[in-house]
Amino acid sequence: MKLFVDRGIRVKHTYQLNTGGNTDFLNMLDRARLGSKRKSKTEAVQSVMPERMADEDVHIGPSDYVAWQKDNKVCFLRIEGEGFAGIPIELDARLSVQDSPNSAGIVVDAIRCLKVARERKVGGPLYSASAYFMKHPPR
Image 1 (cartoon, rainbow, N blue to C red):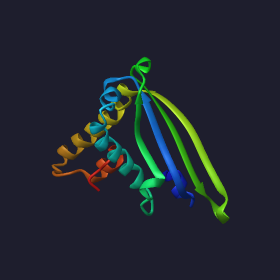
Image 2: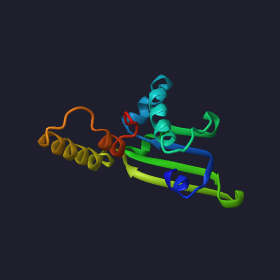
Image 3: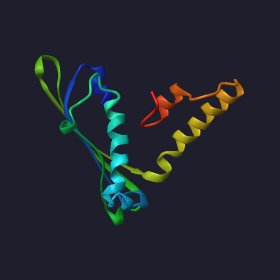
C-alpha cells in the first residue's frame, strides 16, 4: 500500500486474504476471535494511507483454515487504484511463507532496540521502534 501511496496512486479497493493450517488459523474459525485480528491488520494498512479508506473498500484478515497447509501461510493480495490522469492500476500477488519463524527476525531486531534503549537509560514506549516493527503501533 505504501508503495502505491508514495507514487501518488489513489487506492480505490484492496484485500488481503490469508489461509493457513496452524493453530492460529484454526482458532480463527471461531468468528468471535477474528474481530481483533482483522482490526489489527486493517489498521496497519489504513495507517499508511493519506486518508482513511471506506470500510467497504478494504478487507484485510485471516480467511480460512486449510489443515494440509500446516504452518505455511498463503496470502492473496489485490490492490486497485488510479495513477496519473486516472489511469487504472491493479496489483495481484501471492505470498507463501512459513508462518511461525517468519516473525523471529522482527522479534530479534525489536529486542536489540530495547537493549540499546535500556543501555541509554531511555524509558517508556519506544514509538519509533514500535512504528517500524509492529502491525498496530501506539502511534
